[in-house]
Length: 173
Length: 100
Image 1: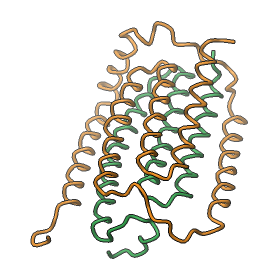
Image 2: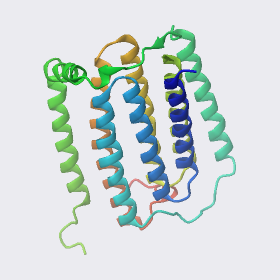
Image 3: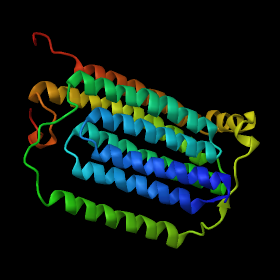
């Protein structure tokens, strides 16, 4: 068996188990830490797919910035555990049934329409080569320059929105 | 050589688990994390297709998805903080009125 295939299977098992762990954990902090591990495995998938820049962006933005923000809010609110309220008895089985239907649909659409039996070549030295990131940068700053600038405006709007939302009104304690 | 189908299968499974999390959990923070999981599954499919068809556009799109996800998380968590301030709890069952 190919070494990359073994690596892929191990990573796939870790990714699915951490996603399940996130769903099952009672405490929101554990859920967040499971999700960090999940994002890290997905980052390694990106490396295996020959996308080093996306892998680094995944680690810094998702596993770094976004999850730190999540942990910060969880600890700020002290809301890592919710009291158990009344639970709808049919909610969980129905949700699992609907999720199974969704998975079957997605599998059917993906595998019936596409000729995807072809293997993807292993990324060899090209991941380390500067050409990969160079091509990405050329494309991003030439062909996609306008969307890139719009993204900066989006982030600015999000920042202003967050400040306005969480600002205390005058006179409010 | 790993077939593209394997990556798509992982992507589909992760997306389904994210959707399941949105349906069964009642803590809005965990619902939010499930949404992030779904975004990640879609990103994985994008990068896999970009590799299969040897185009860069898929990776560029993933970059924009990550940027939008960062903005969305910031605004969403701010909303959760505001809801916590007015209701002193963040259980989704309590969010049943438009006016706090």
